[in-house]
Image 1 (cartoon, rainbow, N blue to C red):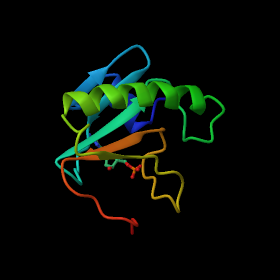
Image 2: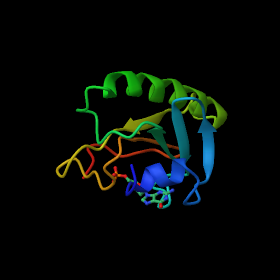
Image 3: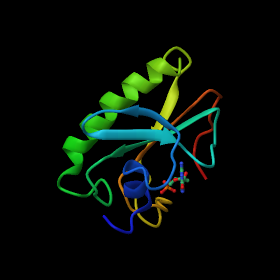
Image 4: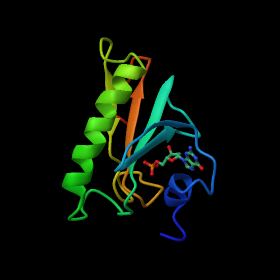
Length: 112
Ligand code: DGP
């Protein structure tokens, strides 16, 4: 989509610190990391959020990518958090479906 920040990062029009890519997924480090590892896992196909009818399939691809990144970032043993912020109350600021993958420190619960 023309005006989508993450579509521009996927297209290479805006720089992104890529950690993983395959046919369906592009993953890059968050510009404002909230943990030592903070990666955004994004479907290449634009969709707003997890309520899109295409989201279940996209989230399966995102989970597969997350497993690979967890291993490459050595997070499997200590654990990590995967989050899909959705809509205003969910705190979503970029309207392109994405999974936050956070790890490398002990994370608090509940979130604010
Ligand atoms: P959310 O608030 O859940 O929609 O997450 C959007 C995330 O995107 C937020 O953690 C900050 C990150 N972000 C915003 N702009 C950029 C950018 O230009 N580059 C990168 N790498 N991350 C960005």
